[in-house]
Image (cartoon, rainbow, N blue to C red; front, side):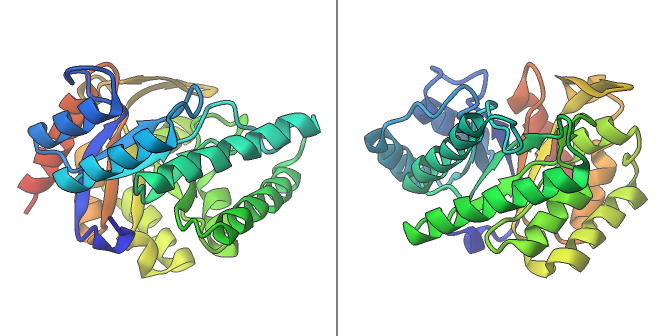
Length: 282
């Protein structure tokens, strides 16, 4: 399914729903369709362990069921690592994710790009930008059109502020932000009201154009946080995240794309809550 075929805001889960018959990606897609949800993120967080053959059949099933897929790359990525080997492996993991994701027709892949470590944010940005440009060039030369979506992160030690992710999107063609609104709330202790959500969406349009609002890759979950940002994911009703105000802002700005729910432990329960809340908005 082409990215421009998503004519609305779709809701789904980060990974296979808890209530699926098995932990396979195929069972996940079947369950998403049964629940009446619209999308699913294939989780490669422990490594890209899917054969090309399986990826093709996953894509065929998703197309038959009309489910939009995205993918999440491995957690072991740090494009700002001090050791060249770690940087090389980080790039390989992003490339592997994009190659398999392209085979099952994913519209975008997301990942946590880097840690600052001992570098300044500006130095880290320059490093991450250089490596992402190389990754995008390799993929485009292979004819791979999957959108690369570095994620807004939940801790101050992680590269991935809204500003950084927006800037990457404005400077590298083929890079579009993955906005994790829960992460940003946990990281800042703010960004949790209708007006703040509208401001973020308006920044996206201002920096990246209307097209970015029409092709959003959003992550949402309940979240616990402290002075050092994100602690853990929760169910939305158990957290202070004002998801209904975010949904109202998304509807007000006519955003389209995918909303991937990463709540713990019953992710499909919150995905359905988000979808129902959104659909009931005036």
